[in-house]
Length: 280
Ligand code: ADP
Image (cartoon, rainbow, N blue to C red; front, side, top):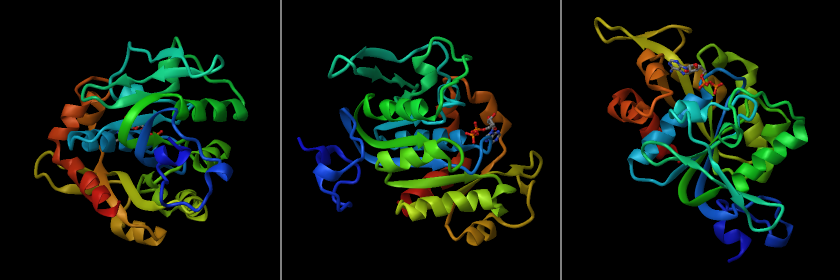
């Protein structure tokens, strides 16, 4: 099998196999690789990744999640993976290892640095090149099998690690996660411009923590900005994929194996899946 056969960019790039620098998974093939990016941390990038992965899985797709937020990995916790650890087995050569991802309640394959280290509280105190190596190794050496979608919770911001991921992993496209306050700032615009400069498709922006739903009348109440999410996305020049509410029930279900059932039973997240499918 040639390197191109298992590459998500097959048929879409002009590189020759001999000059190509993108990585190809050693243990499986991946049809679509979606990066979820944000201008900074704490805006809900991991939450958006987890919700979209769950919804895609609910349609029967084979889905994986790569936790690329190396210094603040949170995908295992999102899915309530607390005790399990990924297995590390001998790889194709003596120096290489193969990682067996942990599966969530509905069968999403997750790999994260937190699943490869003994204790999740241990901080990562490595410099850039090592972080980059770990990130690319988790992508290349995990036994993904055949996936329809790999979602990557990207490192926050537009720094070195993000750049390396974008250069070495053949992203099909990216989704930008932002809060209403961020939507007007240049940090989100930077993410969009970075992807565009690298010829990576920007599906659009998900406005997280957009509103709360009134517990009395069910009305949507915007909390952080009076401007509509459409208007804000329009200013960024990208489509609005969805608005997500602040949802304390979701927070309560996160870190438990019930989070996927909760997401699938909640109509608040249908728009995210519907728009993503339409735009992709
Ligand atoms: P990031 O990946 O951008 O760092 P996270 O997805 O980890 O951000 O979210 C940061 C914090 O905000 C987490 O504690 C998460 O539970 C909370 N959070 C994110 N989105 C929502 C939401 N829509 N409703 C309530 N809490 C949220």
